[in-house]
Image 1 (tube, helix red, strand yellow):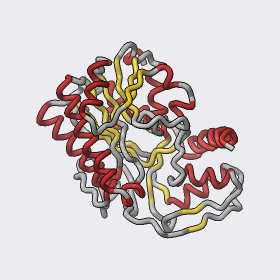
Image 2 (image 1 turned 90 degrees about the vertical axis):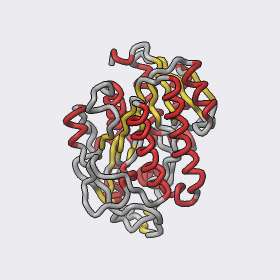
Image 3 (image 1 turned 45 degrees about the vertical axis):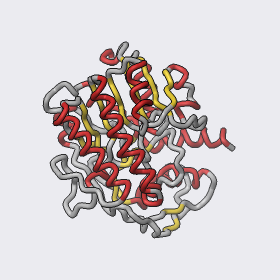
Length: 324
């Protein structure tokens, strides 16, 4: 990790799940980290862990060109990890305008600021949702971005904007399309894994919003961080720069399979999930082909689901006891 020593890095969305895991890795590697923070959330793992004390903090919004330029210029940033976004599918369905403002306007504002001020590396956190619904799985990077629902469309647009800036202005950008990322630090209880863990630790029956049969890829947060770092470190290679990469496990799982795995690892297999079947605006089945990432980035997931969930459950046991 000597690559990062004394490099100036900006992380947007640093108080989120992935940002809270990426920032400590960068700090440990000797990077000079600046974070763009919209709201100061003391429950965020970045803040709760104390890692934010080693960062330069810029208060601002992604949608503001002046705020983003201030972060880049005042801290002489050369590498940007663009993680900032509205990240919840259900929130996108209920509040499309806010989602488009954050995810689309926020992205083109950041790309424009990076173009103006000569950023040398821009890593964009996209999603498998950018592909939209497809009768052919797994997704490969050659497939078009064709989201249909609000959150998915916001990610499709972000990917197209990244490609536009890469090919029109030679912005050194690369896009990561991950499956569902989980791990320590996610306090968004509407998501499957945090919500199920919180329920089981409280001795309550977990609730599943879908019919339980939707299929997804689940990626442990440390594997996602490995992916982002690998892309940034190799972005000067022509086969990396301007491209997109999928990051997911070898096999997808149903929502019900994941919930029951959590229940078993938490010692409560007797709790049978309640199936609400009320989910709206969500893709039914998704699965990523990660062969390109393996071939060009030497990336493979290091955390099997059970191993990642064990570590995640242990974190929630400790954190939730502190919150009670």
